[in-house]
Image (cartoon, rainbow, N blue to C red):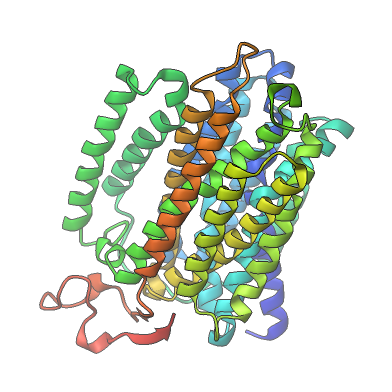
Length: 485
């Protein structure tokens, strides 16, 4: 593959993944507008986000595996088509039910992340893989936060439906170019999709994420939450058992037990808890009227602009991540990124009386996100067999999402647990919440320190090794090649 086609491929992958990431946050500031326009309740309109989260959690690892089996390019194009259909239906949705269904369809495109990483590994020269993954991670990270900046101006100038019309135009062109110009990856894994494991995986993810995301409304002690959490434990155990016994596992658990993989996933779970909660609550903090004793009374657009230093910083650090890999290895980047996240949350907890303080904290957190996103992706990609790239990176994305749901749920409990007579949260709720998120990020830094300094990238999955090979170790004929971490 020549250099020109590498650039075209990267442009297509970055556009598709970037638009999907943008849709994660683009609709959030507009939820009150959607609620009013569709004459629905606040509890119902939150399903616009919850449905998207659950759908992405289910389809990301499953379609990552499908891409490893039938071809990453083919699955990528299918995911782009799903995103296109979901955006089109959302733009035309006559009621909240259709909009929620459209968001479920959009969530299918969560597989764009692992598929894109897999295509880069398969198609790009080895010396460009780390840099390209870092650049793509930077685009994804920026896209995930850019929606908070763009939502206000788009809704104010046009209408909330244009939050979906713009992606329709971009995704349609991206799908056509991807189908025409991206080559099909030659790396395939053998076997078939384990549908029992897929159902069990979907079951425990829904049973876990649904009560976590809705616990602030249903109550942590409510029978629904307790039953769902119990079901999540049972289904998770059944999934592990089914995967361990399968000749064609959906997620090879021996890959998940590789030292570089489980430590990176642990750091991703904890860092995701801090990152997504900051994204969810910092705009609300800025929009709180100063009469509450804190906040700046910012508009949706103003709160988005206050997040701009974070977006700029995460893009810069994400792009620099791959270029610094020789002197600043992925393990060090992940550790540093988590420490920066902890420092930013500590600043928010202790100093948030002036807008420049919040902007400074946002910028520091952005530096941490850029480093952490890029390094996690590189650590996973370079530590698993090429044929397992999609499934492994898909699970890493899912684990970050689970962490984010836990962090957001805990933050919600602290912020909304005690309200002022006006109905607004007390300042102490935010202070304690940001302090908790600092602890999450600091724990992620300790998990990152456990990542092996040098990791292995097996040529074949452990599942293909002879029975005499120890669990998690490749066979003698496929000894791993050391890759610098």
